[in-house]
Length: 266
Ligand SMILES: N[C@@H](CCC[C@H](N)C(=O)O)C(=O)O
Image (cartoon, rainbow, N blue to C red):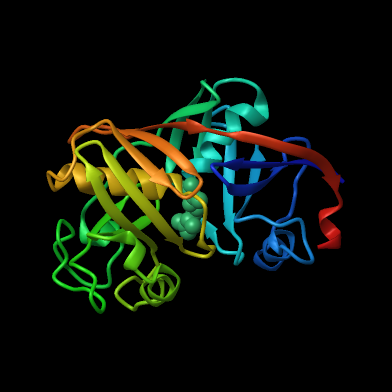
């Protein structure tokens, strides 16, 4: 048996398992079973907090489909709340600094990457404005903020079939590691509306790394100036980035309930 908390960041929900007391064995099928909304606990991502030799704690991230990934912005904001203090967190994407702020946390998400093989793409291509697209969507941008994102800036978000185009693009062979798909509408110089089809989880209420990647792509293309408010279905995130620098993400994190479970049963 070990302790867990159900938490969320703007409705992007997590089962956060405390693995600091002893090893918790999470395989892909087990992560999928825990995340199942009918037969498990239910979540978009399963988060395993552990000990670390390099930071205060480590964090492993599993999508609802069981795939283990490098980064999760909303979950990173939940960790200071889960532990009750500011923390440094070791992730597959590097060390992150997360501090309690307002009704959530503020996190240094590191520096974005734009090289085609860092996204990764299947072959060399300009990631500022990619010479490709799908159906009526405009040419996208690609950014890696610890995990891979493609961003489409559209005129009218309501008319985009996000649930049909999202999975099509996520699984396109251009993206050998699959991809998180961001559909964004610029509302003003400092305000973006965003819907994210997440790799391995589908449409979510919010995606922290998606907000970071989208704000960075917009600032890079001169479509916005930082700091940017990114409005997702679940609420708003504040993203600050200057070219060459780190991304600072600030927004809410919520504790829902705690429990104890025998993970061997999943
Ligand atoms: N919800 C997260 C992102 C979770 C991982 C993502 N689906 C991936 O596969 O990279 C966030 O808030 O950033």
